[in-house]
Length: 242
Image 1 (tube, helix red, strand yellow):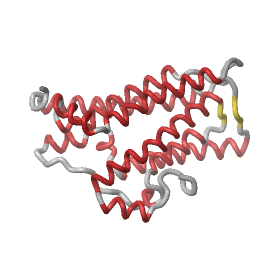
Image 2: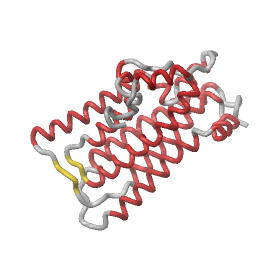
Image 3: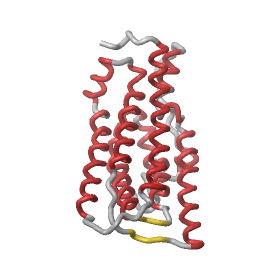
């Protein structure tokens, strides 16, 4: 068993390295979406790469449901310090996401291309998505999302604690503003190639399906406080739609 056998320095290094991998995964995605997925693939079969990409993203999505299960968490805690649980999840998710972007198959065709002022509007939507991502992550503690905060807390001898429930600001607009920001980012592209569209649709569907799982955990964590928040903020991810 690894629990208790890792030095604080080693645990801290693993957590910070995981945060760097997480940041690298986001950077790699931005590069792939902006450059690689922006190329219009030559004519050819469409259904085959669409199905293959969907299956690929489903494998990535599987880690969320598996690692969120109580039994899986118990296994992680058996072999690693409790404060590394979030970091290990970040490691797995980041590496899988890097792999998904790396092997994503080009899909022939282009849905639309915006020009002039409409193109500028599309870029503005994407910029808004990036800004909202930063603001939403800051509101709930980016270091906690990256798996570093639990390690820092344990290093100072403090009891583990969860981030307080955020209900103001962007979180008074939709319950999952990070996911709303993602929608703006992936669907705001002025040039929507079929490759981008497939990625946007698959990733957004994953987020939409993951929300009920995530909210079950939040209800377990915050109880009636989260139930009241759900009653006050109706929309989960996209105002007026979902």
